[in-house]
Image 1 (cartoon, rainbow, N blue to C red):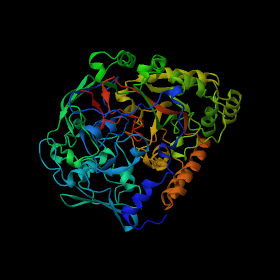
Image 2: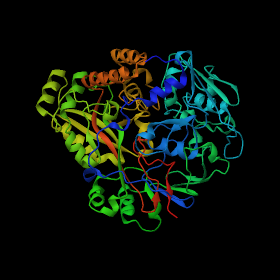
Image 3: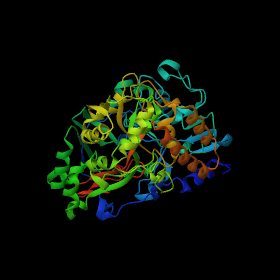
Image 4: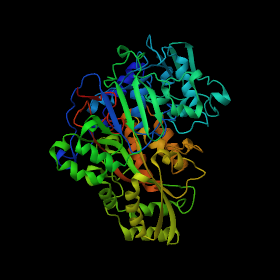
Length: 564
């Protein structure tokens, strides 16, 4: 597809259905729970969010985990552009946020310019400036602040050796000729750049308010709410940012007067409280997924089921392996484990089809034209004899002992994997970590060994938000290694990624990502397990609840309110 004008290219990009979007298959409501109709709420009241964990990162330079991006971007800060707050396929549409448009493209897609709206203010009434967006993007490069989105890091000119503003000063490829204009100069054409600009990295942070590592604890708000108090691991309270102008922000309704996040609760307790639906729990939602053990209590009770949301997430649950250390540096051994895993048992432990569909590829169906890919044709319960044969061919002697890292909330799933691998002589030691530190732990390349429970969700509806992030060896960082956790560095794969990036026909690129997915299944740097759903429960007085397709089926916080 030839691209001549920035807005034309974006319109074509966002209008295509080749990326899949909401076109993936859905199971009947009777099987897995439907998406209840969205009901409206008036302004006011308190929305309570019940959570089994603290936030890992709310700093917009470091926030790259679902559903923390949803929370941060809808409540505390705004990006240059954002996704529409509507159910279904409409949620895939990019709309202006801080900027007046979704971006102006020049130089064949190597230059993108955004202009800020008039009158934008922070929580203290000071003006939001283009230089503040530039500064946050610059600080996202700082080694002191690992873990955030890296799309812009891969495409900005002269950014390869840049180490952030604390060490390297300003980055010349981001220009701010005045307070309202920001210009990005890229080393290659990127028609999808507006998608990048929806991410937290493209939110403003004024230099005077930057507290480096401590910014996680007190974000300076450009969104509709500000932090009144935050006790890590226990409670966060948000109140209205009176300097936020709703006229400049059609994406966020900002209905509740207060948002109270109660942390550190057991998920089973959260589930039971929301099922019972008493007192303040009537105006509460769950932050994390409903436990699989709670599905029967929900789906067999029509009144509770009416408050159950279970959207397809656009996410793939995987088993990651450190491909740079034995025995997982042996490609045939890794491939053998594709056959060893009993994915049906894993799915059952997670809660059955209501929790997700068995994955036979890395790309979820929403990114492969709505059609699940299955090139290996491995039975859902595995093929033990084939796995043993391949292990013998690999030269790895069994029994072999390995470590499996997982979060405390996924211990049962890890045990199912442990049992699968035991069948082929792989003895697994399970190590669990608090969810608030888990991704930082496995993202430390000096410490990660063995295997890890992992998953990836689309940041936008294209295979380019999936395959390169998980498998491009050039994206690996020593700390905060959020994407390529398997440390997979394969030249053939990287060359193919570059080839697809250079394509101007986006439909052809979509198909090329699918083909690369099939090739990666043979190399097995990770093992896909399930294509996840997002099981969530809301109280009976919560309104505006729906699962947003971009934020992995998480409730869109921009639309939530409470019935008065």
